Image (cartoon, rainbow, N blue to C red; front, side, top):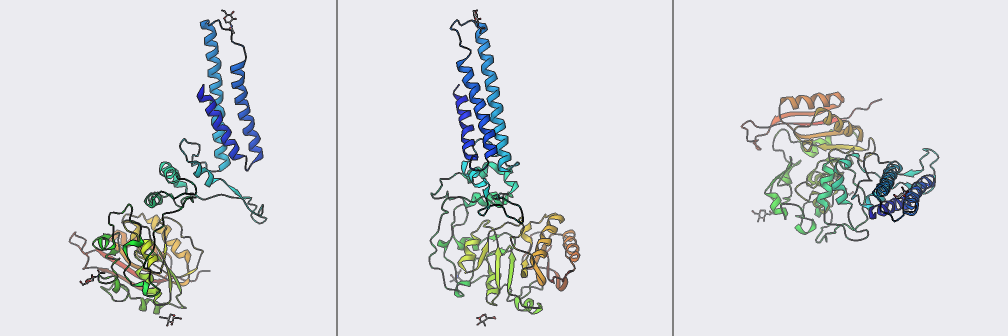
Length: 417
Ligand SMILES: *[C@@H]1O[C@H](CO)[C@@H](O)[C@H](O)[C@H]1NC(C)=O
Ligand SMILES: *[C@@H]1O[C@H](CO)[C@@H](O)[C@H](O)[C@H]1NC(C)=O
Ligand SMILES: CC(=O)N[C@H]1CO[C@H](CO)[C@@H](O)[C@@H]1O
């Protein structure tokens, strides 16, 4: 009967945690636990079992026991259901076994500090975790399995894996992230083009263990030797053109109406666009994940602003705030469905101010179909085409014999009523 007391025990633990918030639910849970315990009490005390071990009596007892077990099971399920409803995470089954307490604690709603908000009627804040996390509960549980107040496991890779599986935003954690001593950071603006030491990054989980190693590799769509700030081609980007698809920053800035002061580089690799724009006194936020390389650490070591979000999340910016958005959109993958592109385009449109510039920088048109899709899509938005170039790039052969086709454009967002 050990399992019986264990189960009811767990039920009372749940009750204690819940008691912090809802008294009505407390009473319900208390009753439920009480009834369960009364049943158990009844079973073991009355009717007094006489010690004549007749087979019939035994079967009677076992019938009693199975009734109790069923009742306990029912109470347990009911408690789980109540907890689910109480926490408000219907699709994230927190009553599953092996869910770390820390995850439940994080997700527990917190009452607003000043009571009910008179305008919205909201009384409590709910911590955010993406619905897609429910597809990766095991990974999420692994992520939330740590000692509170101690060092976090060295598992940024696990966090990124979750994000790539759509579990974004991730829950917060109460442990200390591994900190890498950032030695030898340079003063701004020298930092923009000074080679960055390997020590500034956490290389755990990466194949390469140095920037030198990374420079020999083609990473993602647009980063070829993009950590080489001395030799390589990185230093020439947006300053010198390699083909008619490349625009230089001075030309693009000259197209703007009103000044360009802040911008967003969506999928901006090692941050060189932001570095060039910083030289023009324009502040750029560069969004990038650490896929195959410590992009975020590298960008921040240059004195620039990295943002660790995936391509699939709504941009965490308010409407109409940017003067410029630059992207190649190549991070979306070659097989992005038209609808997916459309969601992204609408979000880019949302964060751009009227009159702001959208710079589509060397979008890789895999085939004619994809070129048509992106063209049709962009034209829907009614932007003014300040530049529009479709061309082949000869210097980066795709290996199929045919040189790849790229679309570059500078477009101005119209003022809409
Ligand atoms: C750049 O090239 C020079 C000459 O080939 C070489 O000595 C130097 O180490 C290179 N610098 C970097 C950062 O790769
Ligand atoms: C950037 O700002 C600094 C300080 O105000 C100024 O000296 C410099 O000329 C500006 N550079 C450009 C390209 O506008
Ligand atoms: C509760 C119950 O059924 N008790 C029975 C156990 O067996 C003895 C002997 O057969 C009966 O006298 C009891 O009534």
